[in-house]
Structures are given as structure tokens and as C-alpha cells.
Image (tube, rainbow, N blue to C red; front, side):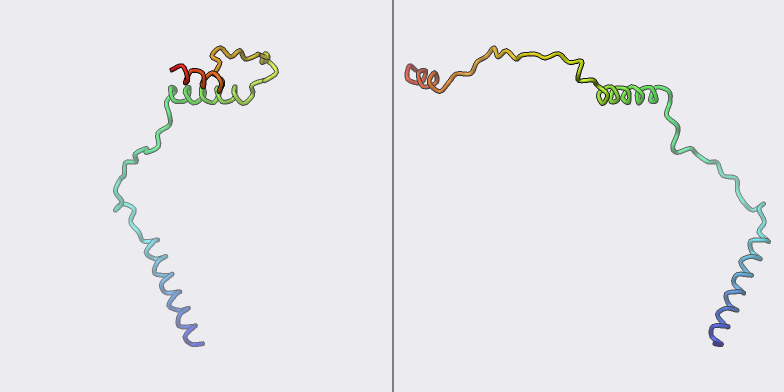
Amino acid sequence: MKLLEFLYVQFEKREASLFKGIQSFDTAKLKHAETKEKNPLPDQEVIQQEKGVQQLISGIENFDQGKLKHTETCEKNVLPTKDIIEEEKKTA
């Protein structure tokens, strides 16, 4: 029990010493510091670019597929069949 009391007294002494040091600190010893802004705000051009990208993405996401017309695919370059390939091999 005495060890616990001793530790408590030591803790109280340290705490009192810290408080005394804080209260008696002379703020005149502090130096003036210039702060530099490391994360500047974006300029208007960057904001407009981001808005343009957001509008593009929004337009794609909200696109109404009902406005599309049906189309038929017309294949203009027909690939040869196996028979045609075999005939060309024989004639070559």
C-alpha cells in the first residue's frame, strides 16, 4: 500500500511541476512563424474542367436509351466459307 501512495505522491508532484511551468512560461520568448499554404484552392479553370467532366459523366449515366433508333447491320465484307478457301487453295 505504501508503494501505491508513494507513486501517487510522485505523480502529483510531477503534475504540479508541469502546471507551474506552463503558468510561468514567457510568451515573449516565442518567435513569429510565417505559415505557408501547402494545399492551395484550385483556380477557376480547374473548377470549370471538373464541372465539365462531371456533366459528361452525368450525361452518360442519365442517357435515355428509349431515344435510340433500331438499326440493321449490313455486312459489306463477307468472309469466305471453307469451300471457297479450299477452291482457292486448289487453283493456286
